[in-house]
Image: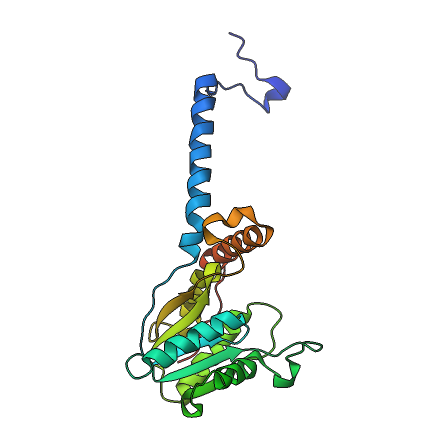
Length: 229
């Protein structure tokens, strides 16, 4: 066998093993099965429902109307046994938005809750500053600061989530609030598409794919500074 190395000794020959047609077929079947399982189960993973009834129910003010309505209904039904307060979070509302009169989504969400029958003394708007990205994290930090100011830095909160956004929402709040605050999530069922066939509509496909990417980023790459104790 010729032992000379080609290209002036900069390269060398090596044997490699490649699949046969049976091997390629088995590989394709495995990938196809994994793809089907992913499509069938990813929505259920993202749309986590793990409520933690406790001191505070948290509503994100930019949530859809039916999400806020569902949260208020749950609060009014079980106010005496589950929650003491509602905190509505959210940053500034953009110019040109018809809800601009409320200035922030926190104030808008509070106004909605009042109209739905939530008593004023248990309802609190917690506005967040204007940010270009990571608005849920900014809202969570604003909530953390509000909790410290009101003597509730060691509490249980339950966030109202919506469909595929829920798992990422809980994760972001956990990162911002730290270990002293226990965080649960109540998932209000999706109404804009069929969760069991999310890939059948453009909106469902877009939301699930976007949330899969966003959750991966939040879980593995997003490392914001922790709030100071």
